[in-house]
Length: 67
Image (cartoon, rainbow, N blue to C red; front, side, top):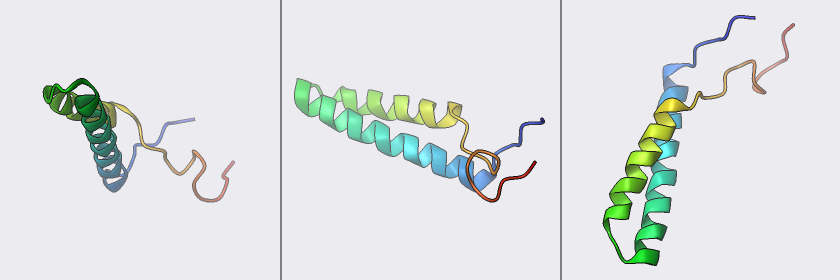
């Protein structure tokens, strides 16, 4: 089967979710270690993860099943 390309809003949500998770991880690690640059590292990793991961498409659990 051909893989479907994710829709632009789904891609945008995926990147925003990655940034939010990276922000949370960066804040926690920054507070834990006392080194504030972990915040920037967390944002960079979150952005990269959000950009590299593929958002779920219609054939991956959303919408009616098609065969």
